[in-house]
Image (tube, rainbow, N blue to C red; front, top):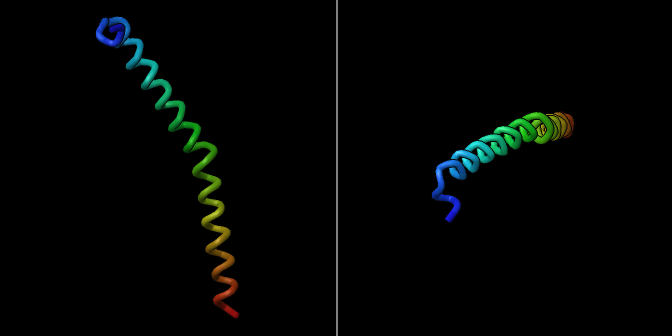
Length: 52
């Protein structure tokens, strides 16, 4: 089983952390700001309808 060999374990951990860091960066850079803009737009629209 290659998972039990030390150099494979190091490689799997390193690649796992790199993938995790890249995913967190991409989500925080592109996905979360769009959700925030959507939330703000919905809030402002709801505020305009409450005034009427």
